[in-house]
Length: 94
Length: 278
Image (cartoon, rainbow over all chains, first blue to last red; front, side):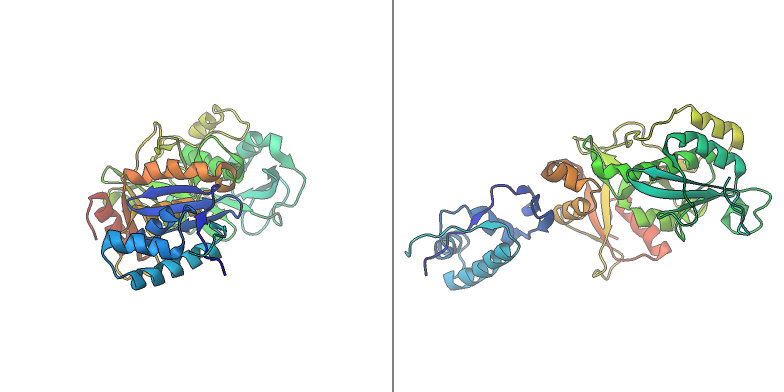
């Protein structure tokens, strides 16, 4: 199964205030509020990295154990996907 | 006049505004005639007692022997709920028109229209949920003792700079018509304030049922999400509303209310106005 490089949809309206994002999805007419952690992950989901790569970056930047970060990112990205905030794009296996 | 009944309604008329059939009935023949004149372009045949979204207007008068109208209040009921009361008849007339114009807000693009009201507390301008205005409005003259004044409209509009502005006039009527209400009522007590010029908001408050304390500071992100959720024309203005509301929230203190108790709410408003944490 190819690894996914999560990428947020280009058509979302996003405003960030003091580290928290508020998102309006005009297609689904849904509003979302992200906490600071989810906002960081959201900003990193630009389609250039897999979850493992994201976990490595965050782990290094915040000095948190990588496996702990990876689990959290997987959960958050799963929530983004469930909320319809992502465009799915497949990438080759690392 | 279409119907007399034992509840004291003497004038009733149906209107169609923004595609909605609206019945309006009142205990005052003169006010009913005024309203019929103002809303003439929107009159339709119908049964004001059965039309959806009916408004009932009780005005003080000799025939009113009990309730707040006996104490001089002009009261607007929407369905069974009293949603607005004031001692000042011209203010009441404007509020009623504003309430009717709210049916057109979802289609507007000139501002962001919120289901929220402005409250002035010790000189600070607070933005609170509309239903809170209804609750506070029932406390009548006691509000003045707390230095609390409610805005004269039941919704607010936000301009591009994030300031509160007077909602646009959307119904087709002449502003001179309110002069008739001044003559009709004579000198009265203005107990509400108007937003004349664009005004920034000092604090945003919203209700959080999960919260135990009456008032707690909250994040600007949560406040922005709350305001966006209560944007009446969100589907029309879409994502363009977010930067506007972010400007409003960005310059404000933000609080979550954990109470609807009247006295606790007043304490919370006073605390929010004075930059306290409750």
